[in-house]
Image (cartoon, rainbow, N blue to C red; front, side, top):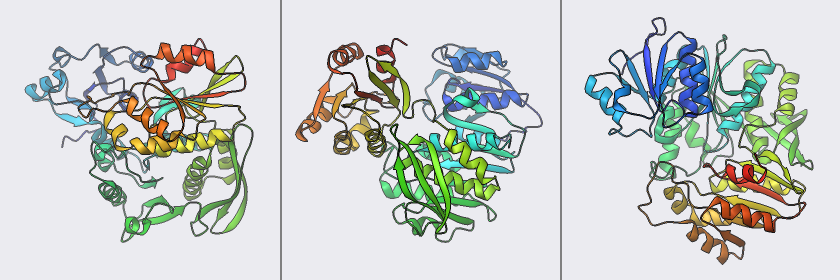
Length: 459
């Protein structure tokens, strides 16, 4: 594999530089003095920001963007080998590197590289960690899979030895990393277009844990099924968190305010350490915060700083984000696109004062919709009324004959009031006629369903 010498900056070209992770890595290289170019389908706030930092970006992707003075081309798992820029780089003999491999090489430059993994909650937990380290004046470098308001984006370049990043299991990209501390939040079935089954996924997380050095630390959820098989024989130190009292960090006396924000009593090895008040909602975020507290305890960050930062953290974009209110109807948006995430979000919403709970759900990818069709239906029954959009294809083509109408039929079998419309305009008109003062409306999914709520609010 091509090895970057960070003491001798080179010209790196990013195929798809506007992606949330790719743009962050490009910014880190720009700060380190590298010459950065890239391409994307269209301009965006992320690409425009990179241009202001000195990147040269072209639209759209085409073979002519690969110039002879490029030393290295970086691409994501979504880029096929017949991509014109990928093919042009290969023909010219320019080294090619995946996004994950570049991130791994960047991690090597930091004494304390921290990787946050799990099927769910990576972005929120990485953001929590970021907020605490910023509050502690730790000057970290941060790579987040969402927009964090306090840093005005998804990336922050610091000068300390702390590097914090999300670690995604899709295509086993996190196996290219070099962490000293890793967090595993949870493990469930997902990305079944890549993994064979849950055992295949567990095997990948085990390999991820094995990356840790002997003086490294794994912080892992004690509630993961058969967790012992994941940690048995590891050479690193193990720290556990979870709802059960036998975890190193656990909780009791959970409660929620009128906005669904959680509070609990922190238990460390069974000893009550006082109250924690979160600025985010749901029991899933209690568990996320426990992993953060365990991490900060390990790093020696002052507990009062941790507690205050968790209280003031209000989440990232598209994670139970209050978008606004129109005609007495509160509109939120959430990125949930897996049955477990949907369940967690709708349970959290139940603690939020409302009359009717509406969920506008946009299924994400054909393979995920088919694999979890029944589970999606069961999860969505937690809403009072469900409106379905067409499936957001993302990287896929519909070769398996699945549609949102199939999900509609499953919900109807369960007796749920459910509607399907093929366009956002139809959905918005329907909601304007049927939502009433005091209702709570959540747009939900990993695609562009957020536009529905924004259009209703005139954003």
